[in-house]
Length: 107
Image 1 (cartoon, rainbow, N blue to C red):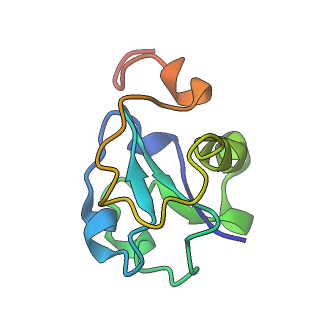
Image 2: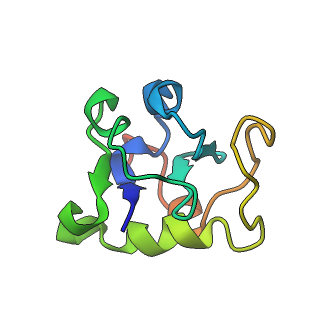
Image 3: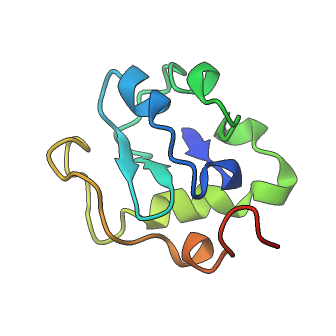
């Protein structure tokens, strides 16, 4: 199990969670942040600091956002386990689920 970042993060990317993460496992995509499921240590430090309540423990993810568990994991399919977000920096891509969403505030 791991923590998952869901739809409320799209086009917000506040990064308070990034600052709190003790293992640097929250990566930045073009429109959203992603938690690496293999690097996350399930400490939960990210969840309470998210201003838009986008972070959930996988088992607690609302049904309407269940697809985000798979999207967060698949985001890393071609990256593997880089061992920390800082050394990669922001990535100019998103999972197709997120890329296909209308800009936040529209639709």
